[in-house]
Length: 307
Image (cartoon, rainbow, N blue to C red; front, side, top):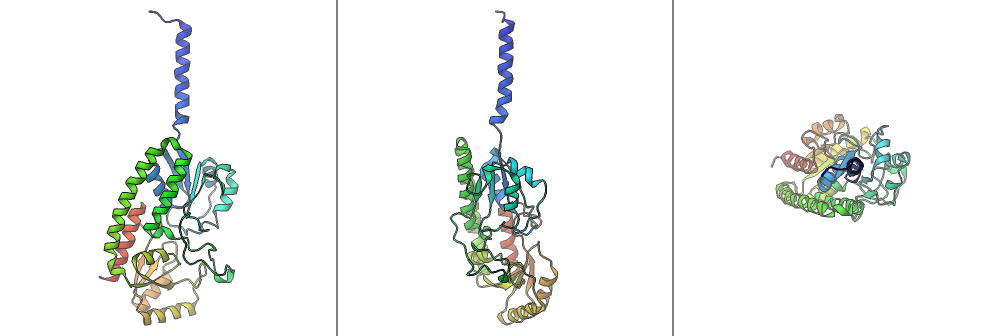
């Protein structure tokens, strides 16, 4: 039976509309994260439902990621902004949020995803006086270096994705459960591998390892910095070397965003092993994912003990 020309035109128009509407309906959730570890978690939970951009690349200071003009349009289009919280991003995120002019991701909105919710912070300062350095009024924000606490961040990300796209909950649940199973297995491996770390004393350049030390039984002896964000003085370095020798501190951790000269000098003077450890994926080679990063940190720390 021959179709009427008008009917054919109608079918063409309807078919065309279907192709126009479908991509919009299937559009990925646009997620911006402040740091690379959070980006990796979002990708694992969101799968092919998300498009993720991290403001950091992995080598920056988590407190001062350099702001780029390209960040503003990214955040303007974002459905979710995912952050560490505990004021970690205070030096750059508030200004970017204001510049984005995106009401969906402002603090207090569903698109503002604070991964620290549900985590009890350590080192909450008694005073926030600037003479104490770049202190964090809500406590130490480097909880992602404890893989057990990273699971709280995973649940916060999952909840935000489900809230934004409830029709995809089954996918997000399956992805989350698969990733948590993988991470739980790795945590068991890391705890076994890290047995030689119990009681080992170490210092780092910046105060970033409190949660890691507590999880794996290490003793966090001090920092190269005089105070958070304040460069060491010659007197501080001298006193640190003397106390490290007396207390047999065996490891010096240098994070890649800080210069190597002073940590190397301290290592040379004390005999402590100098190691460079990332604080987020991408900080050193072969640490592109959160699990790869934690693998690298645990293995490097254990090797540094010589056990």
